[in-house]
Length: 121
Image (cartoon, rainbow, N blue to C red):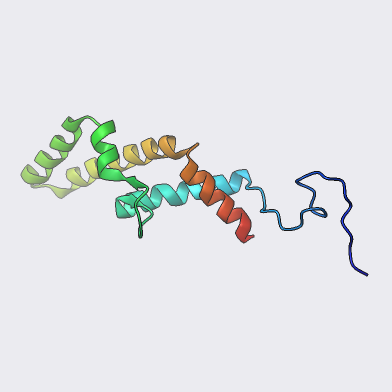
């Protein structure tokens, strides 16, 4: 026996509209945010391939004080002990990740990726 539509007319009814995309959950958004930030950190852009929707260089140029870059550059040139430079890099990396998470938290990029993740399940 074939299941017939219930004819309720509600657009999110799974019987009336069986091919509706799944709604993303908070976990989908969390995973999408994590993926976008990691991609930007690893590749300097998002997405890693294809047309760039976000460029880390341009964003940092607009949102970070240039003195941070000069401090890192001078430290890289003059530092004979790599341990202290590594600490600086780790600290700056953590700061940039935090800033990117805040920037992307409610973005369309993350929302679109979360919908993709929900659809894959």
